[in-house]
Length: 120
Image (tube, rainbow, N blue to C red; front, top):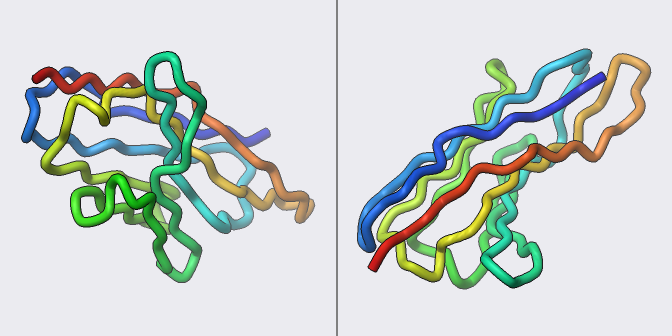
């Protein structure tokens, strides 16, 4: 069994910064793509940023230049550094990882989310 867990969500003022972390655990052989998604209040979940195992990254237009995704393969972690936060960034942020188990099955794994609230 594999799982991921997020941490780092908080209440922050507009213009501030936060760093989210996500740790994968369980019977992990390898981790392919990792990503951060978010669900703003009353809206659907949306992609924020992705990172491949080779550290190729991609960002939603709304966060380009403000957010940075990174990963530490040895620690099985992915991070999201969020700068210049805006009230529109308020959301529950979810970690997603494509985890390869020792049986070489691939598990599309989601965390439970961490709340980020940006006050104006």
